[in-house]
Image (cartoon, rainbow, N blue to C red; front, side, top):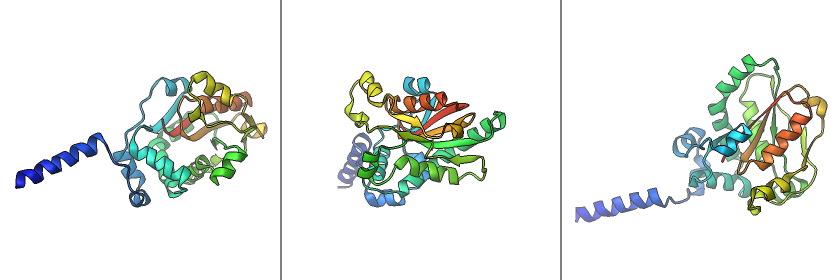
Length: 225
């Protein structure tokens, strides 16, 4: 009968690989940044990211990543925002230190993509702000500053997932941002943070507005793509 148990084990193993089950809430409650980085698929540097000069950590198609993002945004598992922030720091901080040494501009403003008032009221918090704040806390350098109030939404937009085409997504977010304090961004290096980059329309619009307000440079990073 041993061979039947062996076949059953192999069958379950293959099923888990081909049709992975979403992780349980208990598992997400104990997930660490190290484990996430080891288990999750990394995002490929495709055309969308290259055109935006952006970077993303994980592939959104990965079931673990999707479940983490969903649990953070809709189940309010805020500790996952800290896990994402730690993963961002562990992955990018050495490159950021190197860029800092080469740059003539010392201050780095970390700006989360803002939510509209309606979306903030619906969700209760901005997941990108949560990630950005914890990310900045990991730096001992006081020249890295979280600046959530610099970039604001001027109007509510429909969820980008409801927009099928690139042109629709671009039109949906066109002129939806403004820089509230241009004097705070003028001549500054800026790191834009969001949870997910899909077509890049939202990041692209925010980046455009910040550069027009006089930012020295604007880099974009996301948890998933």
